Image (tube, rainbow, N blue to C red; front, top):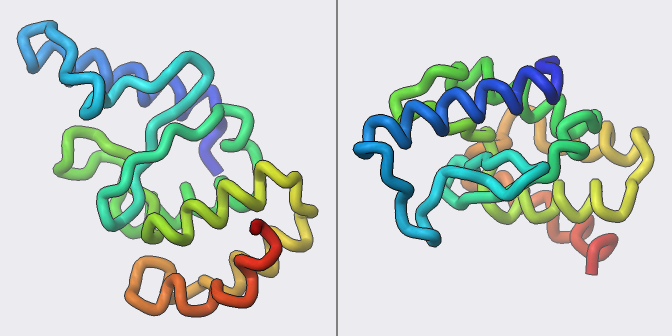
Length: 136
């Protein structure tokens, strides 16, 4: 698992490279790759952008998603250094809900076992129908 400090350092490094490549100017607010202080920008496989608090990166579920991301996309992909997690936006919303509600590590592991093997496919959100009740 990648340490949250190392992830934050990588994110800052890529943000500097992107800013330098754009003539040192920031992108529009809505399209900025720079996260708010204490957050890290990650993308779902369908391109949805999420600002995740750095504290969340130390959880079991995010650690596993980052590991899966490294296996599937590598950390130096062709999309300007984006960290892309191998799941769609619906799954990411559910993951954020689990972490916000301080779900037990056992619940996180059960969730991860339910998405193993098809996290980024069309079936990724199909198994969540009964689980979403926890977060509504």
